[in-house]
Structures are given as structure tokens and as C-alpha cells.
Length: 324
Image 1 (cartoon, rainbow, N blue to C red):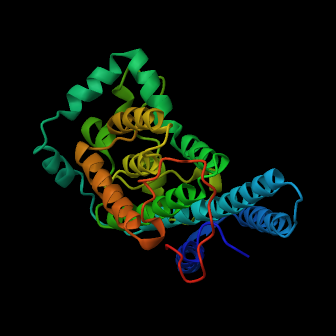
Image 2 (image 1 turned 90 degrees about the vertical axis):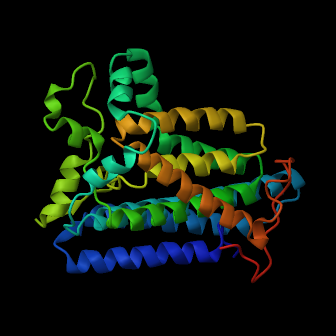
């Protein structure tokens, strides 16, 4: 069976899952068993169904092509489900170590940049229309990323879809690994302290992860739930890095202008709704660009962004020629 994305990508998910399992076994943190079983059943079901479809033959070339895209779509969904949960647990584990907060250091680094966080926050605070757009763009990243994957599969550009999934996962792992050594509460909680004094917002922005962060660092036993694992890494900004990955994946396609516009707005939301310092955005951009460039120079992806025909059918890589 031809796996989508490559075998090494699945191996990386397995490695992350093993790290998660070891951490859960030796920490006082547990994962909701019923949720894990349900997720596993879903992943296995999707993979089995995709295998059944893959082994069928169709007389019509159009149906054969559509069935191929459906197989890759389903395999991609299984991969994304397993990767998303594994990475979320890894991110929670990264804040289990009670290292000193580094907000003062991040503020110091911010001081070298020609932007003022407080002025930007006040601008967003006093402009309801801007606030609404930024809030929606920030919270919609997961949905937009999924739609981006679906769109790449739908137009038949499987190599771009694979590039997107692989770079996205590696960027997430690198951001999480760096964040282990630079834990932070974030700009909103650090600058304001008592966030109840913040007015003109429907809900106080940038503090949605504080309770989860404190709970993880407290060492007290608790249970993780799939839908309640907010991102805990401040530096680098994963939202920024993910947006860059999304935009680069659509480079030289007709959808790039719209994706780029979304990415710019979403990144503009991160200082307020993600409570990020501006230095976090720069770090996230650097991480994403370096990893995306490294993948783009791999033999499997050589020439990917030079092509302009997004409708070109994807041909599976030869054995041993996988990209990642």
C-alpha cells in the first residue's frame, strides 16, 4: 500500500506518540481513555476503508482518478488526526517542567524591535471591527489549514498536499522543542496582571491557555481531553509558523493571494489574541521558512514551486525515494 504522506512521516508520528506514552506513564497526567479508543477506531477505520478503495479498479479513467484522490484524502485525514493529537499531547508535556518563566527575556528582546506592544493592543482594543476580524482569523487557523489540505487534494496536487502536511508537523515539533526552554505566560497576562481590568473585548484575549499552563506546571494530577488542550508554547509563535507554512504551500497557485491575505491577518492577530510578543512572530517566521526551504530542496520536492499546473496528477514516489 502506498502511504500518503510518506512512510517516514508516519514514523515520526509514531515516535511522537511513543514519547507521549512514556511521559504519560511516568507523570501524574493521564489521557481520557475513551477518547483515545474512539480516536484510534476512527483512524483505523479510515485507513482500512482507504485500502479497500485503493484496491478496487474502475473502468472509467475519471472514476479511477477520483478514487485515487479519495484514497489520498482519507489517508491524509487519518494522518492528520493521529498527528494532531500526538502533537497536542507533546505540547502539554513540554510545559510539565517547572522552568522559570522567560517573559522578561522576551520583553527585553522585544525592546530591540521598532514596534510597541501596548500601542498595538490599544489599537485593537478600541476598534471593534478590527478586533472582530482578527479574533476570527486567529481562532480559525485549524479550520483554514484543514480546508487548505482538502483544496490541494481536490485540485489533484498531491505533492503539495504532502509537502504541507510534512512541513506542518516538523514545524510543530521544532516550535514545541524550543518552547520547552523558554516557557512564558504571554504578553497579556504579564503586562496586565489582573486581566479583569481589560475592557472593550467580548472575552479577555490571550489568556485562554493560562489555566492549562498553571495546571501542567503545578505537578498536580489531572486528565487531558482532546478538545481541551490549548497550545502552551509562546516562543516561537506556532500560529505564525503555521500560517507561513500554509502560505508557502500555495505559492504559485491561483489560490496564493487569498491564502497570503488570510495569513497576514491571522499573524496580525497573534500579539493580542495569542498574547505573543513580537519577537515570537519573528522566531516563528524563521523556523517555518528554514524548514520549508529545507524540504523544498529535497530531491522529492525539487521543482515543486516552479510548476504552475496544479491539476497535474501526482505520481507516487518510487520505493526509497520518499521525501521525508
